[in-house]
Picture 1 (cartoon, helix red, strand yellow):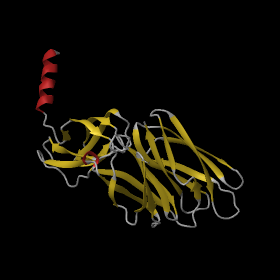
Picture 2 (tube, rainbow, N blue to C red):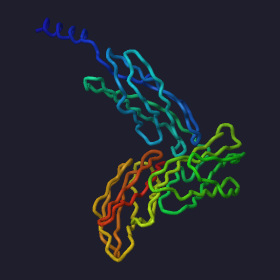
Picture 3 (tube, helix red, strand yellow):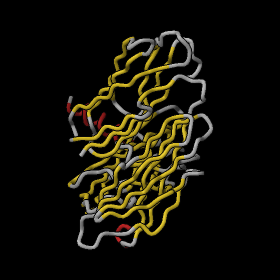
Length: 315
């Protein structure tokens, strides 16, 4: 028996590894980083096998960690650098850890998933409220963004730009340790639009602050939700909920046919009323940091679903 087991073990060791893609380094300690500025890093993917392999998926464990994309297959021994973006604006102070999952497959259909772990200690000196701008509707909207800096010498916002066409800062007000920016989000073509508001500041350590912007534009004849967006904040790990009223043009009662949740973990319930409206309850557990997703509600007799952007912030 022992000889058989030894032989089997030897055969296993001699069996060539076909193809599997690993992330290098497998552990990445970022040290202490400031909340607010975006952290840009990179991870190297390596095919450690004997056959070509392709990356079938690469994702972060939190919406604040965004990897770049990988195209084409990697030959045996080939490496490819992938950029990583870590958005820290909404993260509470203290230690944090994230996981990057890299899924790969070879030409035979064999599949692997390998993990890379990132860790950092967040130091918070500047507050951004909201840390994510989420807007839904058929017309342009106005959002007030507040920057709080209670240090002896607060930073000043020296300029701004946007990766979302038409978005602008129409007004800036300074009040002690706070700076308030009136941000105009333009009306856009129907669909989902994602971008960011970029704030340049006088503090070299916070030279560029990035606030993600999510716009869910809808057609004028579609059903609607009130409020149009859901923003929930509080202690990480606690339960929070929002009631949403669903309405539509005409005199017919609103009947919910289906509700789907994307990008976050949430439980929904709905009921008829009041009147011809319907009421939707969205309940979730707040994450550590920032998470964004949406709730899609299909109304009977309507071609277009109601999409409600959701922004969650746990601290």
